[in-house]
Image 1 (tube, rainbow, N blue to C red):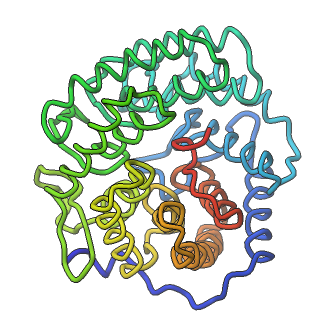
Image 2: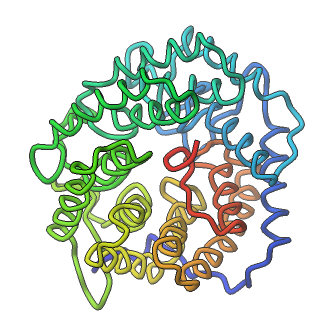
Length: 395
């Protein structure tokens, strides 16, 4: 079995409708703005409270910086009219995180991470209200994360590679390119086998998916076109070899395991963070003319479609919206309108899921990667027929 049917639900039959999608985006934005509290920021959602109440969070993945960036990006795309002064809030999060770091049950003090720590907070502040002091500190943070042994996007240097790339694009300064190259060289040197060996949450692991593993690192190295030509060719070649080695095939479908190590959960995952959807969404812009890679990615896309929307909800990391980006990426790679149609089918389903969850919990879910704001960004991508994945392909 290449996917677990119980993890998915039947796709609703509602036809694509732009007015319905625009209304859903507006509702998510209005709800997020009205739910903001100057003192508490956004309260953690019950589905994000693993092991107890979640204190106010500033960082990008679960916290206020991610919500503010999503609101800003939707406004930048013309999909929302904001009612609050979010740049000032973003600036305040820099100081708040320094004084009271997030996730002290997991880490001790501040961490340089893009998604879970200081780099993402500084980057959002610089995008909304740029200042030289932010640039100086962010450069220190990127350099401090160069040798982080997790070797993955969430905590490690692949995430801060993206921060350095964004800052190089924004400023053109050579020191950002130098910082990017230093982290890229170290990450490349650690790529000794087909997969990176990561020290993650106290164990040694080899993971394929984008959040914690191989394809996320490939995405970070490929993004921005900063690799030299020889390494870019090698990146594409090694990527195809690795995907081919670990793929599971059946009847034109393609799936990949989450990890090479035994999992605590026996069920195979088919979501952005682990499984075919994230593989496709992360690699569809790599080696664009490689027919073998295209064939593998199409198999992953077909599996994602046959599995159907995720029962977990609508979000980016492990929900219907994240899976839908695989279809947008295949539309971008192949030009086949079928994939855009499928992406929009998942969008209509994701709207229903957000509304169901809001009714069930009596409130929205205010985060970028696990909540409604990430879904709103996916809806906007379906409207615009674009495939850039939030904070990975576009910042």
